Length: 238
Image 1 (cartoon, rainbow, N blue to C red):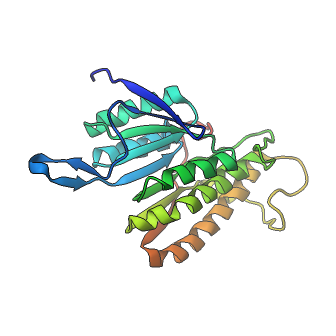
Image 2 (cartoon, rainbow, N blue to C red; image 1 turned 60 degrees about the horizontal axis):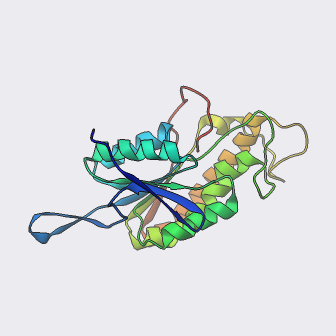
């Protein structure tokens, strides 16, 4: 694969890396001056694992990809793989900390300002044996597995409707089986148990998925939940 030149740009506190000379677009210039429509997708936690494999599959099918993650070096490597899979400059990396709801909203507003979006894959997630908090003081597995995708989806709803028919895919897991039947509060008192915390967040997001699917159907946006099965290693996505 030929060496690619990458460019870093900072906009509103977000880091963006893309192959030099590429930009978000809605079409690829073809022979005779015709422009072919190119669908756009955003994949969170897209620099490795399930997110990157999803992006590679879409790139091979002619999509433009925005990969959201935290590490610029992993972002560069992921963009190079996406471009190689697509045979053109199809990918870009946008750095954002999705453990922060404020940063997530900023990301969504920035991406929404770029126009219609055909696909949003909410792949970010995580589980920890020790209790951690977001910058807003909320238990972190609840944020990454439910609240952060909820906020990002809300800010991108109009962009998805603009590109209808479009879709949202929420990546879930078998952790729903560990959920405790405690619904009075998101984080019941007592010791922290990582699987149970994630298990509470996943059903909450499944319920949101069902409600969102009904609400967005009239706008031409389909909403799905998908579980990829057990991973080979248990590392946080993002």
